Amino acid sequence: MDPFESFKSAQKHAWVDFAPNEAHTTPCAARLVKSADVRPGRRVLDVACGTGVVSVTAARIGARVIGLDLTPELLERAKENARIAGVEIEWHEGDVEKLPFGDAAFDIVLSQYGHIFAPRPEVAIGEMLRVLKPGGTIAFSTWPPELFAGRVFALTASYLPPPPPGVAPPAQWGDPNIVRQRLGSAVKDIVFDRATMLIPALSPSHRRTAAEKSSAPMVRLVAALEGSDPAKLEQFRREYDALASEYFEDNLLRQDYLMTRATKI
Ligand SMILES: C[S@@+](CC[C@H](N)C(=O)[O-])C[C@H]1O[C@@H](n2cnc3c(N)ncnc32)[C@H](O)[C@@H]1O
Image 1: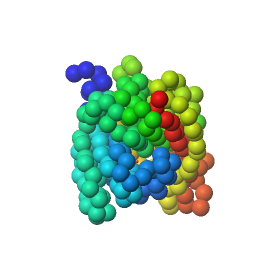
Image 2 (image 1 turned 45 degrees about the vertical axis):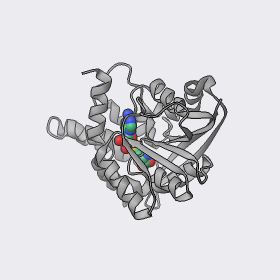
Image 3 (image 1 turned 135 degrees about the horizontal axis):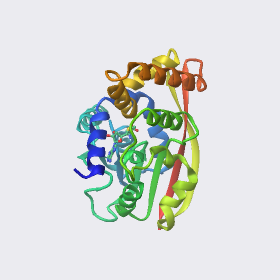
Image 4 (image 1 turned 90 degrees about the horizontal axis):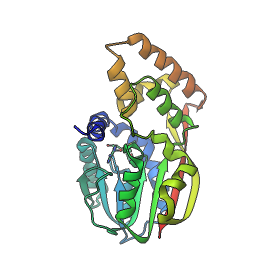
C-alpha cells in the first residue's frame, strides 16, 4: 500500500476513542465559528469534524453544514450530537487530502485541530482552498510547537518509530510563518489570534491517563510499548507528567493554541 494511505489507515484506528475529548473541544468550537463569522444560510465545511462540535455549533446558527472525517466511529457520535441538538447536518466519511466536493462549493471551510493530522500539508490545504469559493473564509485552530500540545506531540514522536518520509509533524501548523507559507498567494487578509483550552484534571497523571485512552498519538504509543518495552513506557509517562506540571494549576491543564483566519482570493 502507498505509505501515505497506510499512514492514514493507522490514523483512522488510532482516533476511534477520541469522543471524551469533545468536552474540551466544545468551547473552542464556538470560538472558531465566531471568528469565521458563520451566519444563517452560509455553506460551511467542517474538515476532520470528529464528533461534530464545530459542525453542530455552526448548524445551530442556521448555517448549511457538511462535516467530514476519516473515522466512522466519531461520525456516529457526531450524528448523535446533531440529533440531540435538533439540527440537520450532512456527514461524510472521507479524507481531507481528497475532498469529495466540487470547486468553490463552500462559503466557509473550518478545521479544529483536524487537517493538521493529514500527512501532506500542501495536499490538505490545496483541497480545503479548492472547495472554498473566492471571497470565502478559511479558518482553523492548531497547536504551536513550543506550547503544551505541540511539546507533547514532539515527546510522543521521540518514543515512536519515525513516520514515512514526507509526513509533516502536525505542530508545524501552529507556526504562523509556516501557516503563511502554506496558504501562500491563494489568500489575503490573514489574521492570527491565540486562545486557551482548559482541561479539568485532578493531577497531571490523571490527564495523561485520559489522553493515553483517547488521544491518537498517545494511544499509538501505549499500544507500541505496553507489551514490548514497559520500562520505556514508564519513562515516557514520567516525562509527560513533568511537562504537564509546567502547565497545570488549580486542577486545570492549560493548552494555548493558534487561530488562523484568511479570505480566499
Ligand atoms: C483532534 S481530533 C479533532 C476533532 C474535532 N475537529 C474537534 O475539534 O473535536 C482530529 C480528527 O482528525 C481526523 N482526521 C485525521 N486525519 C484525517 C484525514 N486525513 N482526513 C479527515 N479527517 C482526519 C480524526 O479522525 C479526528 O476526528
